[in-house]
Image 1: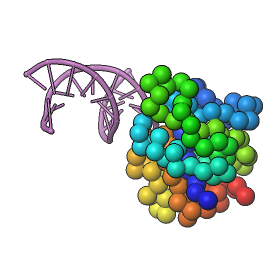
Image 2: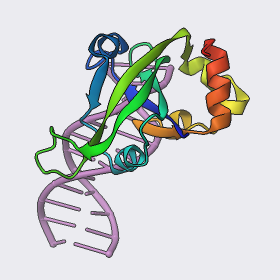
Image 3: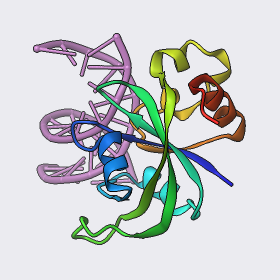
Image 4: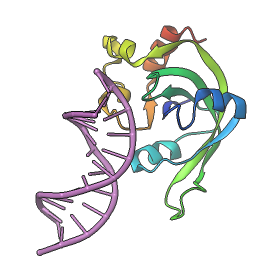
Length: 136
DNA sequence: GCCAACGTTGGC
DNA sequence: GCCAACGTTGGC
């Protein structure tokens, strides 16, 4: 199973809203690299839910509930979205500064491509981040 | 097809 | 609020 990280500004859509809605279409991605990553997601894949701008930390884990389909908010019909389902919160949110301070995580896309909103996370990085967050 | 201008994202 | 990174747009 592949692992991912998705970003959201909590002002626009927060983890609390994701939990309240349970299943949420992940719309509005307008970047081809991020879209390509969403197309590669399989049902059941897990992803970290990261709060950008405010918080700057991984706050929870979501599961891909529906694989990529045309984004209904894209009038041109060029981009896709997936449906995400809330799984569990991180017992201890993992902050960006913690990630930056961890040499083993220097290669994660969150740091290397700060503007990418949907990115793959290697199995090794996933394990490290789960351990840092107390997530089991 | 190149590249300058401009807009957006996101960290600080 | 500022700025770096970077994607997009439009003139040529």
